[in-house]
Structure formats: structure tokens, C-alpha cells
Image (cartoon, rainbow, N blue to C red; front, side):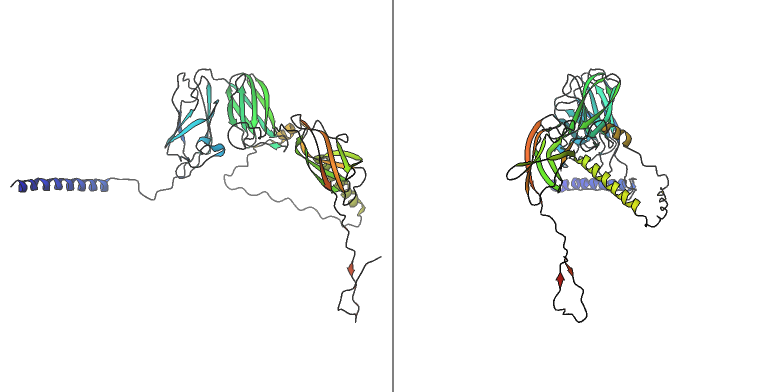
Length: 439
């Protein structure tokens, strides 16, 4: 009897479960959700807020700096960036900080904190372009946030441009560091695609400003990377031009000598030399091997000087030949210039990122260093002979002096082929070719 009495209760329980499931299905069918197949999301992730916000004073701050987005951003943790860090950590630039910065991903927000902890400083956070959402929509804008844990935020600025001294061009996306003396760490930013930079909200004082070609992406100056520095005294605003170059502490030495023609030899060094300490005939000597007989050297030119003289001589020769050619036909009028390409509706003219006039003026302030020189001889070099170029007192860009020598061999002279095929006469034997050499 007890067994039969329990059965109706179990059946009632099963019935209640079925009723609940059916009600859930009806409710789901009646609810209005987002219809599938809607327009694709093409909007990049936007920054909603940054805490602490810009201009905030947080004297006892000990938490994480939080960057809040309006949607989930891609963690990018599996994509290693330059310098060994994750790609996510490459999207923020926090300074001044001694040591690494911890960057953690939390779906819609990013947490940032220096490993050394927060000090009594004015901090500068630069959020760089490159954050993407799960649909690979990329945010190409940047944002800068300044907050302080004690000192007052300044209102001075340091701007300028980073140049490649040897290559005579701008340095794209150079790493810029402004170190307030007597500190050893400074405020960081990147130069733009025109080599220009701007650091604002600095406290007046003395700074050492560095521009570095951060090739390995570790956000530090390396002895193997080209850089330059300048000492500035900042009042309210100042601009500085930085001429980056490799700081090789080894003395310069010649590494190769190349035969150009019977009168000239090109000498290459392992680094660029100081253009204010030019090489001349007292530093460069050419000797004949094996007896080391010295040969007279007329002059020593940089590669740029030699190319300029060669171009000038060729243009003068072409001009003289054109004047003598009186039988040439009258030149046809030049064709009209091509019509400018039509721009689409609403298209904007291209924006000039680089002030080329300013760049040329700045580069003209310093002589151009080079690692290639041309030695012009007094007498022609003999063919198929061995020579050695000996250099003394070559000066590097850091003032290091070095000596060395390098050898080369003049090539075999090229003899023009004066043989030609004799004309065939009627009835001549054609079983072989007849060649003759003119006297």
C-alpha cells in the first residue's frame, strides 16, 4: 500500500516539471531578441573613461590605472611585440617609470600598473593607436592622460624633430625621452610620421632630451641604436632638433678598397667619420706591392664630393656637345603638362606631414658624415697590380682615432675585339669563316 501511495506523488512532481519547461519554451518564443543577419559591426572600440582621469590628484593612489572601452577588446596576448612584451602592453606608454609596466586584460577594460609601484610623481599615460575589437576593427586614435600622486602638474612644453644625421632624412616614430635633472628617468613619447614630437605639461627646469631609433622596441636607449641628446633649459616652451647617429665606441678602420678607374680608388670604413676632421693626403697613402713603393696622391674626396664633381663634369660635356651640334633638328615644343587627377566627391587634398624646407635647413646646419671616400691619384694605376691603401688618424663621430690599411688589385685591361667577318664574294668557299685583323 505504501508503495502505491508514493506513486501519485512522483507523478505529480513529473507533471509540474513538464509544465515549467513548457512555460519556459512559450516565454522564449514570445520574447523579442536581436534578429540574426543584421548589419556588420564596423565601429572600432572607443575609450569611455580612464581612471584616474586626466588632471586628477591622487596622493595615496595604490590601485590599477583602468582604461574602460565600450566593448570587448582583443586580448592579443599571443602576439608578441618587439622587445619581448605582449602586443597589448605595446599599446600603452606609461612614464616616468623605472622598470617594466604590468598590463592586464579584462575583456572591456585594461589595467595598467608599474611593477615598482606608484611613486610621488606626475605620471603621463599615452594610449597608442592599435586597440582592436573581436571583429578586428582597429582604433587609430590616441589619448594622453596626466595625473599626479603629489607634485604639481606643469604647463611647459618641449617640442622638436628627430633626424637621421648620416642618412640626411627624418627619423620616423623615434622614441623621445625628456629626463628632468638630476633624475635618471624621464617622460616618454613617440615622434610622428614626420619626425616631430611634442611633450606638454612639464615642470620648468633643466632637461636632457633624447631621440632614439628604437629598433628592438624595448623603449630604452641601446648602444647599438642610433640616438642623440640635447641639454635644454625649459621656461615655458622650447624646440630642439636631434641628429641621431650610431654611437660606436670603437676606433674607425678601413674595411674595403675598390678600384674605380685608373685614377681613382674608393675606400670604405666600418663607420662614419667626423666631417669636421676631413681626411687629406697626409692621412691617406697608396703603396705598390710587394715593395711598398709610395705613389703620389692628388686629393681625397668624400663620396658626395666626388659624385657632385662627376655630375658637374658630365653636364658640362653634354652642354658643350649640344652647342657644337648645329645640324640637329629644331626641337619640338614640349607636350602640355598632364591634367591633374580628378578627386572623388568629398576627397580632401593630401596633408603634408613633413616640412621639407625646415628639414633641409636643419640638416644644412651640420656637415654630412660619410663612411666612403675617393682617393684621386696623380698618375694612372698599372693594370693587374697589387696595391695597399694606408690610413692614419681617421676620426669617428665620437672623436675616436684609428689607423689601418686595406689592399686591392687593379683589374686586367679590357681589350676591344677588333676582329670582324670578311665579306663573302660570289663563288667563294663557304666551308669556313675567314677572319682578318686590320693593321
